[in-house]
Image (tube, helix red, strand yellow):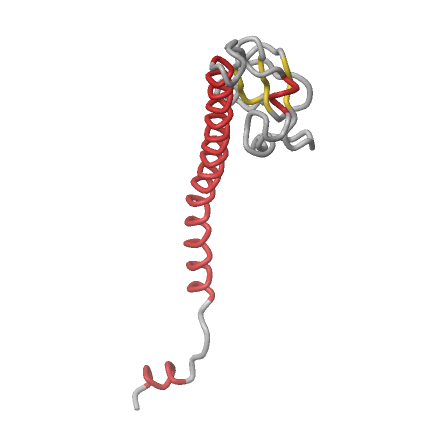
Length: 146
């Protein structure tokens, strides 16, 4: 047996250089992957907010259209704030949660506010009964214009 084979037979484990190389590679991969993961979280939150807003806006439009029919009273009108927040009156169930909500109240609704202006705590929804507009009540950059 030559000298080179004898040294490999008795060798167990990894050298320090091999371990440092693996740690550096893992660090580079995590440095690249973490910002991408955070972007996915932000995109998912925005998509959830847009989806819920679409559902609420459709419910308000359905309420408006139904109120114009004979069975709905014959007078087209948007739901009042009390009707809008009542379970099963406009939406099936209760008002859904805002994914940007940070004030501790899951689905609060601020009424009669100006679009793009945060009112009350940071979160929930804003509703304008005179026009039927619904939007996210958040000060997250770029998200209050949904």
